[in-house]
Image (cartoon, rainbow over all chains, first blue to last red):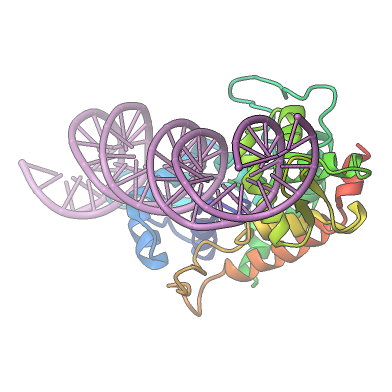
Length: 135
Length: 135
DNA sequence: ATAAAATACGATTAAAATAATCGCATATAT
DNA sequence: ATATATGCGATTATTTTAATCGTATTTTAT
């Protein structure tokens, strides 16, 4: 449905938490307990945030995570790109299987969906982790 | 995920088709064949559009559907309200079960999600069935 | 009166996507 | 050696969406 996934939201919450504690490494254990979100699911999410160079980590006893970018430079759209890369695509185009619309040439929906995508993305690009923390 | 459901899109396509043939009743059979979408699924969708006073119908041999409202007065947001009523809600609030966020009082995400919802809705309210047909 | 074609409606099943867990490997500090 | 932490991919569970099914009712043509 037309909403953020839990992965996206847990990523935002985790990044807010890490940003609030930017003076030290924060463990997944602490994040998941503090935010009351599933430990292993959160761990998985942070692994993906590492791969996308948004956070970095250290293993071991005093391990944990910290931000690579500043909170104001991490946009909601960046998070969505990671966790929901096919958002706002028309359903008639199957990117994964590489098929185009069967109504090719006479589909009156694709352009509308892409226009909406562009405008919605403009809205979302105004939201960063920093901005979301001010609410 | 953050995208229109097939129900929403099939509804838009069906309404575009009905609008294009506003001089006559259009059957589900014709709509589903012309748009290459599942017949029974489309039938279900049109039943919901009737309940929402967007189209009206006549049963029987020469039965079919026609618009109740003008194409310019049917908004994408109207369609979403019918087929995806819980769009753009924060995941931490469970409307169906009536539960509130377990991070109550310290959730930094709800307000952001509601702000985004409001702004995205403003974008979407600019799109009607008529406008979507001009692409 | 009957048949054909259409809508009406809720139940049910299938498929896809999301959510979450699991198990083991590696790294670090004590 | 042990405790605590991350790393990583596989797997399972749950939810949501997509689609079908079966039967009832209505309307028109024959």
